[in-house]
Amino acid sequence: MAIDAIARNKAEALIREQLVNTIQQDVPKSSTVMQLGTRLANMTSNQTKIPVLSMLPLAYWVNGDTGFKQTSMQKWENVFLTAEELAVIVPIPEAVLDDASFDILGEVQPRVMEAIGQCVDSAAIFGVNRPAGWPMDIISRARQAGNNVAPGSSPNYYDKIMGEDGIIAKVEAAGRMVTGAVSGMGIRAKLRGLKGTDGHPIFVSSMQGATPYALDGAPMYFPQNGSFDETVAQLIVGDWSEAVYSIRQDVTVKILTESIIQDPVTKNIVYNLAQQDMIALRVKFRAAWALPNPATRMNAERMNCPFAYLEPATAATTYAVTFTVKDNATSPAVISGAMVDVEGARKKTGADGTAVFNLFPGSYDAKVTKKGCKPVAVSFDVSDEAVAQAITLVSE
Picture (cartoon, rainbow, N blue to C red):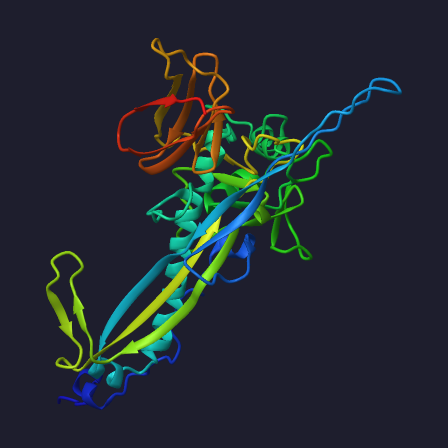
């Protein structure tokens, strides 16, 4: 005799599914540069200039009671901050908003904020998608100053970080103290076993510091907004107070209801919000940043950099840009001691009249100066090969 029962598959239409009223997700991450850098007063236009000390005065001993006293001078120059805009539009059908069990707009907005932080960090630290008005990134500035350390085939990470030629020492050689260390998650395993000469670990957890971890006393940050590129650097240290930024327009959010959305490439209309019963979340943010690098007694010519970094096992590819500086004589002669400034990275020409920069692909502006000569400004692009720049200086 068959015994019947109402099985689950017979009553599925009557069984209510439980919906958990929380979304399993990570907490949105903020910008590291804006967390560690120095915020200046908000900009009142799209460009702001900062007077930066570029030459220090000197003092001289006087020879005897009636000796002549020598003169000296001090000099300033302007560093410009140019505001660039980050923006995004997120279209959403009204029916989706009405039917959703969660506040979709409330969920999207913090993630857009996180994306803005990622873009700021990627451009300022690594030069990724760097807008035209922003200066050379921190990694490139450090590399031009020789503040990049290669790990080698069998690296001693203690020496690479803490040694006389380590990355911390390179920052100190510029007359700066390391105020923070930033790295990807991959370096943590390498740091855990490192100990100082006293036997104490140099990478420690801290309950009282600015961050949960510290490296040789400096707070350590592990950006988790997707901006840190471990193919370019394993660890970056520096005086982060020297990285300054200013906001022209803080994050603004606007709900669009009667606009059209065009494809930025083809210019075709993709969405007509009013006709298709849609809304769109538009988020805008405008800001500028710079690394002024003022003159100090230990970095009088501003050719050093307050940042240094540890390279990965295989260094990222850069391309040599060689400036050859000559005079305008009938038979041009090379000029040594000319200052070549590529967006804040500075080098002097040697006895052969050349200065070599190693740069990532991108567009750059440079200025060549020499006392007694008219300055020369040039723009150039770096793609996938070495670049040669011939510069002719004319006497004033």
